[in-house]
Image: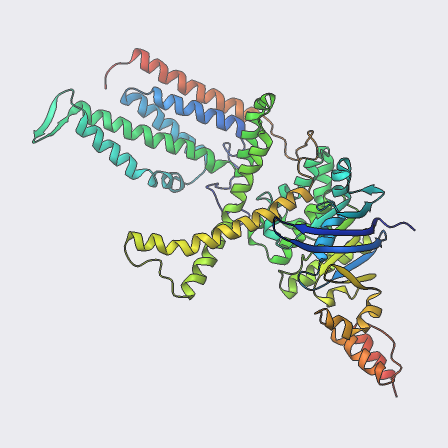
Length: 277
Length: 270
């Protein structure tokens, strides 16, 4: 099956007058429709660069990025691609345009020239999808970080995208806010078949992903199902990532010859250990 | 604050004035300014005063909030009044010593000038008190839309105003945080002379600008991500509609304006 986003040997460098910094190099991947994909890497590993290539913010130096059959290189596709691939950023405050929540949600749909009645419907839908409908007429200033970020997600949802990219959208939040946002995103993935690309440096957030990509120095160093990828904790440590404790314990037990199945949650691990004699 | 707006002057309410179309309010505010300038005698100032009082009553905004607006221009009013009194030389002399001459006409004239300034500010404040910043910019955008014919970027200007208003509270918060951080490192903002204090603000302003630029960067990306400028046929969720209130309001303003003009033509005296 062809993916909703396809990358073909994509490379991108940041060029300034006197130096060139590698963004990403030689990346090929395919994200399937309805998947929950996590991109993990430490700061400067190229994960945000990769995300910005997905929706045409950056155009690859070599290689092609194809979104739903459209190449990001062609100018005429730009808005069509951005409509399909919505992106939420790190700081919720800096993404809000209007001072009243419903106006902010409507902004994207207004830009696309959606008819008025449809915008009103979409605002209602987007706000209830992130569980914030009651705040419709409020100002965002008094909300918590997690609530603001959910508003930012709703603002993207109002454009009816098929892919939702979260570019470190949980990085500035407290643990409670992070949980809220992740729950909303998982719900969108499950109930609305939204393809989700979650960019983060918290490996715990990737536990429920269908597929995980580990990035380092602009390259994908490993990918696959999270339980497979997380097993190789030495490799992950070598690219400055901290493996969830469950995966570490499993890897150590397996090394000593205990027949333990791969899993990611503490409860599952406890079950496994109890099953040992 | 309730569901209110935490900045600007907007006073949340459901009054007649609140429900008027922002475009009409802007136009009527301009008509009001012209009318105030047409006032010549104390009778016409009295008429404006009565009009203003009834507007405030209709708006249901507490008088205190309206009067707060004068605080900002109080010194300006006093200064112009004093200058007017001192330099007006015509009419019956009331007091004359050294180089100071105070005349009766001078007193009347400066009183009228002061009233004019105060009425101007109070009247226009009433517009911002009863209109959300958002609908104010919406109204301006709509009023400026004929300029689109000469390729003036009306919508962009409206968005800029909107974002400016939107970021005021965020930047205030930022200033607070930076000041606190600098205080924690021993910066003193409230001691020393004027120059020392101004200098002390420098370590606040520089981080503020840096962070504002960083914000602008992310905001620009966020605007792009939401397909800003994707089409010329932009739609609006909230459509401005002119209703019977706007008609009544316009008629009232027209009546007051006509009255002031008639007074100017037929009424003489102070």
